[in-house]
Image 1: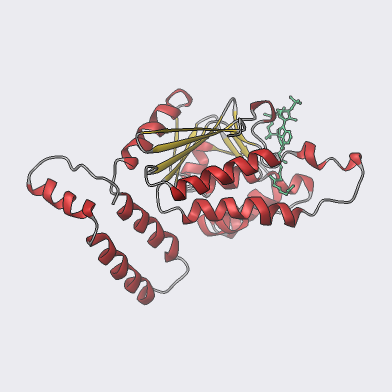
Image 2: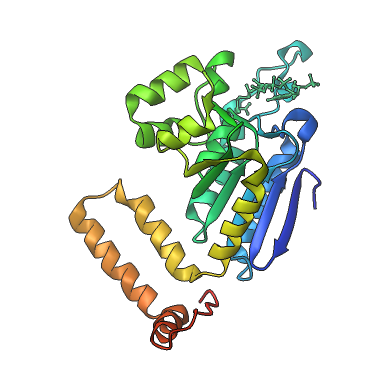
Length: 262
Ligand code: T3D
């Protein structure tokens, strides 16, 4: 296992900590590979029922390591489409298609692809001191890691364009006011709150939560008629789970449910 992404699994929560703090957890190839492997593991292992993503040190993630892109070192210009295809797009797809809750605790600055990876998570909590920067335009690039899609969808064109074209930092509280993230919390409270939320969701009816995520993500891409059909199919699937039977039994017996994630 790579030290660039620290991973612990406790009570169903896979906690992933981006760990290159001296570079504000920017992505080198090793960290890309490590994150991809851990997200693959989250898909494969039944014991994992929620993921919590955060960063070590004072930052969350500063996007691509620009030290690895130094034009002064000579050689041909890098094919950035290759990095996107090999690392960022697979990471985004793994996050979005994982039918388990993914919580992101943005502990400090989130810039470039680092911001957009955070925004791809299901529930984003950020320290009040954290900021989101679409840093790409400062170096002549476009918002990747799904940023041009998620910003436009969540914020609408006016705010999406202003953030992307100016690269001005967006403070956590404004991000929450704008509906870009779930909430901004006091710095000192961030990890405890994020961990409690992850633990709560990991003890939940995992299949039902996964189907809920699937439905909400599909909503913007289809009309109401198709979506109603999809809700019917997902509810049918949820209704056959052990956790649904347990949820109803627990309600009728006036006790808390003991969900097992299936
Ligand atoms: O290339 C491809 O494959 C295409 C994909 C691209 C995806 C992308 O993410 S492109 C965007 C890349 N990221 C950026 O442009 C952000 C660069 N960083 C910054 O603008 C600033 O560091 C921050 C605004 C994020 C934070 O500023 P500040 O003042 O709090 O910290 P700092 O002093 O700038 O950074 C602290 C250290 O981290 C510093 O190292 P040093 O001087 O102490 O040795 C700095 O160089 C290093 N660092 C920060 N970001 C990166 C980085 N080193 C390499 N790459 C970085 N992205």
